[in-house]
Every structure is written in C-alpha cells, then in structure tokens.
Image 1 (cartoon, rainbow, N blue to C red):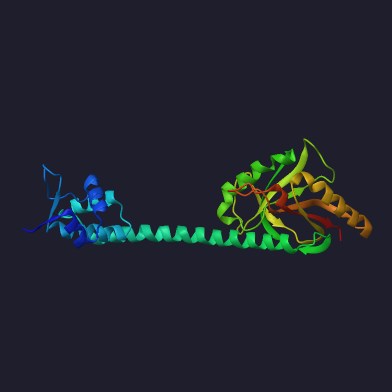
Image 2: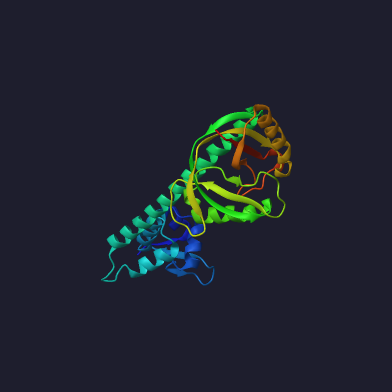
Length: 272
C-alpha cells in the first residue's frame, strides 16, 4: 500500500501541513506511522477517504469533536447518515433564522442612525407644531430622580428586546421640576402587545404638540424647555400632561457617545 509523507498527503488532499498537524494533535486524522528517528509523518492511501470525509463534514459546519465521533461510529449498525445530515440541517436552519433576526435588527439600527444624523445635520432646531400618531408602547411608571430612568429602560429592553421598534421616550406627569420624587414613565415603542409582569403595554394616543429638538447633554434640557414654553405662552396654548421626551440619539447599548451630540425631542401636548 502506498504511503505518503505529510507534504505529499497535503498536496493530494488540499489540507495544509499545519492543518494536518493540528488534526493529528486533535486525534481526528492521525498518520499511519511516525518515524521515531526524524519525526516524519507518513499516511497510508486509505486515509485519503477519511481526509475527504473530514473536509466535507467541516464544510457542513460539523465541529472536529462531532466529526471524530461520526467517523468512529461509522461502522456501527445503528449509524444512519441521513439522520445525522437531517439533524445538522435543522441546526443550520435555526442558525439562519437567528442571523436573519440579527440582520433585521442591524438594518433597523442602521436606518435609525442614518435618519438621526440627517435630522441633526439639517434641522433648524426651531419650535414647531406637529401631530404625533398613536403608538403602542411598553412602559414602567415610577417616582424618583430623573436619572433613575435607566433601570426601567433596561428592564423593558431585557423583557421585550425583540419587539422594540422605535426610540425610547420618557413621559413626565409633573408640570414642574421635582428633584427626588419626580413622577415619570420610561417607555419603549413595541410591535406587539404581550403580557409582561410589571410592564404596562398600551396605546399612547395621537395628539398635536409643540415640538422642539434639543441637541446636547440632558442637563441642558432646561434651556430648550424655556424656548418651548415661551412659544406656548405666545400662542396661548394650554398644555396637558404627560409631556414627552423622545431620545433620538443618546447613550447607546454599546457606545456611550458624545453628550454634546445627543438629540432629544421635547413634546408638549396641546389641549384641543
């Protein structure tokens, strides 16, 4: 029977010498013999079939551990290659579905970021009147410091991440500033109404509002509120609660970002 040195076997199988040495170490494809004097590896011709099988199974996303087990069991009476291929196909399809969901989420985030950048680039940051459509949201209402809103946002994200389809917003149930006992609700737009303990999922009504985009840190929002309230007084509008802050661009899930570039839309709803 023909024997090949590792370089020759590499040339025939298309596997690099480095890969063959690694397969040897892992026990998945061991040489037929090793010369004790010089350490040269030699491969019998019958190992070509095993090498081709390993290459094919690797291309089908089988792990080396799985491949070793399959090759060792291939002579068993109960071994059924169809069952093995079917199970692998099912596993791959689950991965495909998972990656499709990730791709859809990435597309959504990409489009939102592009839209926000365009808004920041072209927006005049003037007070305007606009109509806001109704939207389904998941909310957690609480009392405390405004800075405490991060916890309920995180809780909503953890419970309903796959259904979130818009920018986070904070509903303010106080007309005045309150330091330690502010009454507010952290909300996230969602695509589906499902029951989650401690989270209120409901439709926020449509309405007409006075709107103003604020660029900069949240600590400087008061300057934009002054501008919005001046407009309200000039127009003689009566404002209803809750008012809303929509966080168009802020600290992300991955990167904190630059607070000077944060974009927050203030919405003061008008009593019709």
